[in-house]
Image 1: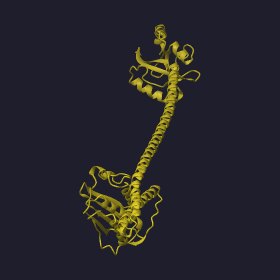
Image 2: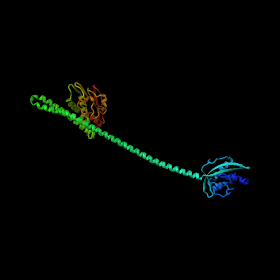
Image 3: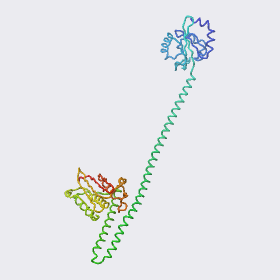
Image 4: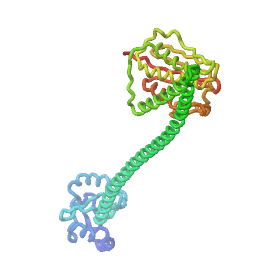
Length: 409
């Protein structure tokens, strides 16, 4: 059946040997009819040794079954198939080595029979190059991943350093601000002490000198007048010192509260008795008379300090012939203390600062005062979980309200 090929062998040799690719022609039984020298060289066979051999000799054993099925299907519905349409094809060298190949198929009829011509290209070099490229790409990706990880570590480290530096900077700024505030407080304190102590001490000195001049018995009223001045000035200085000590204890956390039972009326009476010495001409205090039965368990001195401070402020910042009203009630486990005056009030624009240490509103700068009383009161109220608030209008008076929780023994 190969006579036609053999008779035209010269023609086929000229055609097949003119191409550099391997050429394999098979019949319907997958028997090799003719090959060119490129094919024989590619698969390691001598000239004409592949002729009349089954095509399977060039195909890996584990592909035989699949290839037979593919060939039968292709042979029945054959059409031209260009090279490169199938990838990862393998051929078998005579020595058993696998050869990566690329195959193009061309069906044709010669005489009365149908054949398939396969153009075979050894792509070992290309595959090796692809593997090298793939390996290089893999190594490059690994290097990129490694560099990326290192870069991420560096970035994270830098972020951590930035966070640390920002924290340190904030801490430093906070420390500098605190130091600046402390310096300002020291300056204010020294100025305050200088001013607030100097005036009373001068008054005490002058009164003492005048007392010495009134030696005669009939001058006793004058002596008592100046002795009263000395007493008032000393009490004022004592109150300022007490405020400073209380402020220091609050600041350092050394304030030790002493809780005990006491009658509220006792504290109120003492506060009002001391306040009466400070009243201006025509001023009067209205206070509750229905508190005799109220028994508290609290820090008596703190209650007295809060009431005294608010009442003294009401007297100091109110004009002559004015009324100061004290209201006290117990409601829902709260002690509510309210002191209302008809004084000069607190300017609206300065009300947010009224509890700040050393702050004094613009309309009271000419009056004696330390600017720490309300700060101390708020500090103690906060310590007990209470609340202090106020309502005020300029020249219309001020009402302070203190709420303290009742303490169970």
